[in-house]
Image (cartoon, rainbow, N blue to C red; front, side):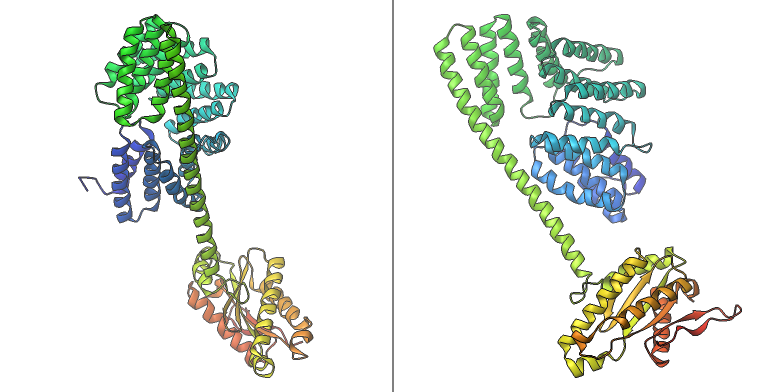
Length: 533
């Protein structure tokens, strides 16, 4: 696999690099995380598989595949919840937040961002503590709560400074932009100046995207010459080829054209804007082309060409409306995909539950028992189980009908389930087949179980069966076995003991409960805890 190490520790470190380090090549990281997933599958490490899948969802999102990211993240979220993987769950909510930001759903984005921070603990990485708070601030800004966002940005900045986090410059970029976008020009300039100072102190070159933010702020504060110099530096740095983004250069040229227009250098601005337009058309950058039309109208107006400005503004407005419609349709498709994924997951959950239920009685079935009981036997030394069998049930079928027999089974199942739900809420009842049922009683000693089960026996016998069986009695025999007395802590051994006790109850006259009693430390033998009433 191209030299990829396959031990769990190395794979975990490779995933952490994708999770916590900033990368400009989303496609390469997607391919990398797919490789890691295959290696993790070979190891049988489900946590590494889920982490790799979350990285894939995040990279799909960064590549513009919002629907693909939304569909994939459901599975990761479900696994994280069922396995109480707190750190993975925190990261999952952060990606969820970004998905909803792309869908312009500020409320849902904020909800997931809050959960992403609430799930942080001492096991979370330093990057998570900084970045999750930064993204919460971004979500608060998008939801119109800049005052609250400002608090979170400052918290994240303090943590980043204290820990030397490489995310510091990125969070300051976001902070500066949100201050600018909400009309706080002076605050935006203060944060931008701090961004420049800290980058210089750290000896780090600012990424082109950060320089673009600073250029916008300088234009907003009418520092057009500074903005032109900043944007030329931005374009030079982008040309080095270290940064991705098909629309990046066209966007930076557009910002440069705005700075040049502010300086009154209309010819330079037109030349720059023409190149931005060319790249938009060449790369099919429809959203950015709308902004180019808008800037062209402004540039015509700056030259006193008002008729041309009006004509281009009409083009801008028409293009804006068309792009808005396309974006709305894209968001609708993504939401539909998310809904269908959620619906399919819920349907799968329903099918899984149905597969573990007896269709006649609604009780759990043998498949459920086989999945659940072994774990209880291993973990609960006070576990007690009981096999319950209807007495003379063949007479009901033969003398009345199989339909009446089904009614009796359903009624008995309901009586058993209600009694166990009231007396042992952690227990459950299952239909093992035919007229035989299993009652599982966690953390219940044999004497406690004997009393409880004898009450169950009495409830069945005392039920008014006349409307159903026309006077034919319905009783049950019960055989009890406890994990504490088992010769082997296995499901077959425990059920075999319960079955032999059930046979003893039948042989002793039916309508009774049989379990073992301790006789002066001797081997436990059969004895009635309740005789026939």
